[in-house]
Amino acid sequence: MIKLNLTYRTLLTGTALLAGAWACVAANRPAPPDTPAPAVLTAMQDELSRSMEATSAADPPAYFISYTVSDRQLAEVSGSNGALLSSTADRARWLEVQSRVGGYQLDDTHKLGDRPPSWTSPGTNVPLDDDIAILRREIWRETDRQYRAAAQALIKVKTSEQVQVQTAEGGAPDFSHEPPHTSVGPHVEISVDRKPWEERVRRYTAEFSKSPSVLNSIATFTALATNQYQVNTEGTKLAFGQIHYRLELFVQSKAPDGMDIERYANFDWLDPKDTPDEKTIFDSIHQLVKETEALDKAPLANPYAGPALLTGRAAAVFFHEVFGHRAEGFRQKDISEGQTFTSKVGERILPDFISIKDDPTEASFGGQMLLGSYPFDDEGVPSVSVPLVDHGVLKTFLMGRSPLVDVPHSNGHGRRQLGFVPIARQGNLIVSSTQTVPFSEMRQKLIALVKQQGMPYGLLIDDISGGFTFTGRGQPQAFQVTPLVVYRVFADGRPDQLVRGVDIVGTPLVSLTKIVAASDKQEIFNGYCGAESGSVPVSAVAPAILISEMEFAKKETSTDRPPVLPPPAHDSEAKVVQQQ
Image (tube, rainbow, N blue to C red):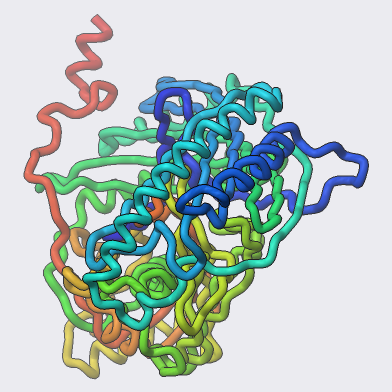
């Protein structure tokens, strides 16, 4: 199951910072000629030459080695219900070694039949000191561990190959040949005074607590600077820096029937001068509170199948789940996958007015930061814009360095969270339409469809929290998107009615053909997608879309009652006792 969320939480193992999913716009300009190479990069390059010389002559021989070191500086401040929860700063370096044995056609990573592969990639934390000798020693130790593991895995691969049938795509090479890339950019770092943010998260969450409907609120500010270094035996040598700031606002309530109500907002920026102003933040807080209070009182929706209008953010998640994951290249060669689109290159899978690309080279869209932007993927390949669907026709797939028979090279989409193996993943999925109408006309088209189908109302999906999809052959080829703000739009002209408690469900091939119209304005969803290679930052951009038939199922809910007493600040009797 693949899951998309708005939020992401940092994972720490020991002292090693393993969280790697913050998307950033990198400083990808070459350093001045007289700038010395970073000590980390020098240590990696020196040890790479020595290791390859030894392991390429071993039995079995290594044919490829890559080293990645991620140096991460993190500052985080979190508050809840008017009080400070935590205020921390940390820095760590994490080393990952990939040692491949065998050859590009068949190596130790080859998938064995229908057995699920191991997606984790062991690594180790390395010293923060720029001491080349010490760094080389840590790299040497990890290289030896990874070579031994790869050699043992290759024995299993060769044994399995003798007794298992190979599919056409399963016979594609295990690794692609790619040209080397060299880019050494400037070192980046952050300097964050956490004290002002400690006061801010107190004020933000105290504002939430003014509403008696709010059970819990959290505000979290995060600043992250990452310097990533990559070298491999093909000649790639990269050093690039990334900086990202984020503020997350989260509020939770509980309806009288026990259903949990959650609302969320986030702000992302790259430069301290672009920090959102207080008015913008408090306007967002008040909007979240208003929607929370309304959802508490809103009636439950019933299961429904009929016309639906998805705003741009909701449509963006729809395309991410329904189309995007099934366009990831590695799924096309895995016999355990559903392979929905594997044989459909050159065929129409969407209406002819819809085109889709994935472009991680775009840092922003309409002035808003795109979370899925990156200069190089996690296999050292430059990011490129990939046209996936042109006027409804499927053109290609998102590729890492696991090639297909007809797509032999990476297009810069090999991605992973630290501690996982890179695979083809989405970055910035951008949906466009050549036939558009204003959103007001989209509403009228929705009402016309409702009347045509003889239904009392259609559904308008205004906001979502995320979704998930099944792509494996052993499960139904289904998806689920979780809307947060849903309205009934009545055919007889009555005012829209806010409802709650439904999820969008369906199957991809049918759902994509039901799109009948798109709006003239695209909206952005920034979030984190969890799949086989961990949690990675993604963006999806799409216009609002009208779907002639979409199914909604009842949402999973809690049966716990709301608290017996109101919050102390909203309990008149508690106030009297406190005053006495």
